[in-house]
Every structure is written in structure tokens, then in C-alpha cells.
Length: 313
Image (cartoon, rainbow, N blue to C red; front, side, top):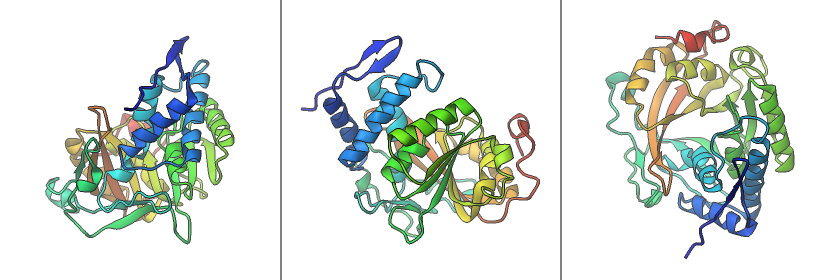
């Protein structure tokens, strides 16, 4: 029987008393989602947790500080995108994240009949593939490492957990607050991560930097914003043929319909909406896959704050 990890609170910060027990808990969390972590990856997640709660004493990084909650609602949630789709091979050496295009008819018909819903409480491998026309959008063993940008990274979610689990990714973490960027750099250093950079800047400004504009295979964001606004912030970073993956709550269908025109104007189209449940919780996550089909017009994104105050419609 698995021993429950306990933690004690000191000044509202959770402290793990037993590192080995904590590492076993992290491993088991990921095993429940069919992800096998190495000892090094497990140690990196635990060190990340310790850095997070320590820094959270002096700055607001997260309201979630209990060890088990962080492991489930931050770490595992960040990488659930890799088990929310069919055709996922989750071994240590070959990790594939597939965009199954199962909702190609979504934009045209406004339906999600073919959406894939994954219940990771049971077994993600039991899902039936409803559409075999798949495009691989994240993989660890390729000739050229895929480039990923996490827009509005905050405390590093989902970018750092994705980097830990998919170490061959080249990652940029973009955040508008310099103090958070300093924390991200500390985490990168302590975890000895390579090919990952934390950048201070607003998405509205960085998107016009030639080093970043349409320079990434994948853009991810867990930022809280409606899909129209989020797409305006994120799609300019994605190369043609690349993918923007928006991390959203379970109820997303109407929001996707409302964002259809904006996404089209920005050069994209929704290809699938994939759902997963965080193991051992009742929390469901929706992942909206948006393929970049055309270049984003040069006038987007609009000046700072405008995408949020006046979303494209």
C-alpha cells in the first residue's frame, strides 16, 4: 500500500519531511497518467517544489502550496497534454504528443462529436482512436529539436514540467514580471536544465521581435484569458504548420465557437479539443489545439492590454 505523503505548514508554506516518500508520491502521480519518470526527473520535480514554496514566502507565485496539490495540480497538469491525445507512446526514450485532428469539422460545423476525452483515472491506453490521421507535434527523438514557447509562464507552468519530461525540447519561458523571470532562472540553474531560457517581456512586445515571431513549433499557455485574447497573444509566435495549445477548463465548447473568427484572422484553425482528468481528482482539463495555417498579419498583436480589453470577434 502506498504511504501517503504528509506535509507540515510553516508560515503557510508546505514543507516535505521525507524526500524519499515524496519522490515516490511524484512517481506514482505520473504513473497514474502512464508517464514513467526517471530518478533524475523525479529529483528535479521535488527540487522544483522546494524552490517554489521557498520563493513563495517572499513573492506571490502560487496559491497552491501543499505538496500533493502542487504535484497534481501544477506538475502533472502541465504534462497531461501528452496523454490527452490518442497515439501516445509514453516510454522514457520515445515520447510522442499527437494532435489527432479529430475536430477538423469543428470550425465548419461547430460540433465536437469527435473530441477525445481521456479519463486518466482509469487507463489512458484504453482509449479508442477515432481518427488515425495524426500529426506529431511534440517528440523527444527528432533530428531537429522542437522549439516551444510558454507564454505567460508565471512560476514555470507548463513550460518547466514539459522540459523535465521532454528534455530534448528547446524551451523559452516568457513572462512580463522580472521577479518571476529571476525565479525561473534560479529553477533552471538548480535543476541543471539546458536549452531553456527565461525571457522578461510582454507577449505584445516580444511577438514583434524577429527572434521570436513565428519562430516556434509549439506555443503553450496556461494563462487565464479568453481564447480570442490568448490566441492573439500566442499565435504570432507559432511558425506556419506549428501548433498553439491552450490549457483551458473543462467547459470550453462555446468559448471555442466565440473565438472562431479571431483565430481565423490570426492565421489559425482549431484542429482538436482534447480532454483529460487529473488522476485522483475531479478536475478536468481541456486542451485546445490550434494549427497555424497562415502567417499572422503584421498588425497583431495589438498594443499592450488591447487584446484583453477588446478581444477580436
